[in-house]
Image (cartoon, rainbow, N blue to C red):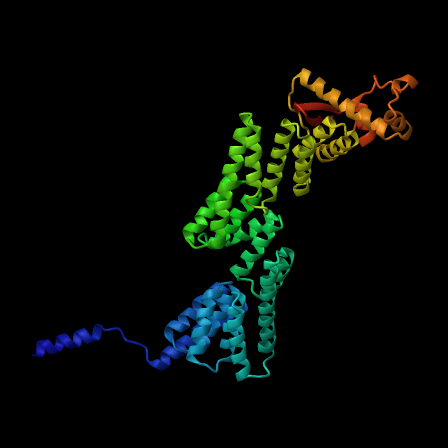
Length: 445
């Protein structure tokens, strides 16, 4: 019996001594004070560590959770901060700062309705609280911006949606939903680098965000990188199988790619009628895809030129440049059609546009001497026509059927390079290079 008692005593002596409740409170307060000191020095990571120690010692103290919530907010970790703020008011519903921090977290994350409820509770406890009054106004402003943006998105007024989202993000900087809506509208406005930047920032934080994957794909889709776009749409649908926008975009992208490729194949095989039909069907798939549609119009214009439907070809090329006013190939194709229909002044205007666009580039195609000679001959005709059309007296004689050579107006010594220099005011030493029948590119020295 005595041996057993001694054993019990020994065992009891090895048990760790737990601090009493008052000691725990004192130690917790010490940790809190150290956390406050680091917070004041803006060392939020260390502040977080000490507030956590305080919570571990006294897990039912509302102010410790409130302090750690404030620290997490400073670190931009609003979802974690929201959890601490909510715990602080569960422990003490009269904790005004806790309600304010909860509301601020809700607002930062874009949940303005929940934020309003938190700020209202803070005002019930302290109706003169200036911060609660201002934050309540901010939350209501965000609600209003959301309503306006929703209406304007349906109206396709994407610029106004971007404006509203920028204003809302001033109060809700951590709201991915607002950022995604802004990015989607930027993509619809053709501001692809900005849209991609927003989507990429979100994907760096959350690689599984289906909305960000969709917007990233949308940018590629509108930039005519359809194959890559499909990969992003498919990935978005893996993350969210019911993502309606990604589903529609993926379907359109695949259909557009297939129709365009089929049209190109038919064209190469000389089946121009089928190519025309396929390009027309492709143009009906998605009117929002401006860049791809510009190419489709130009392709169909080329088909029409092959079919000798030159007026239709001009119309298609005009549609292409309306969608993309930097589309050189469409200007060149239209200029050739103007040449073929003897609309020389219009042809010159298109070649001038090409010159203005390309004058800083060195475009050398390595065409054969025979092709170059033929293209220079064609441009010489354009220059001659412009010389005639720009002189009222010459135009009158030309329109009346007179031979301009009879009055010493021989154009045989006309130099296409000289007229280009004189008319366009470009640098000397440039020459024509041909990339193929009917297509001019210019090399500048």
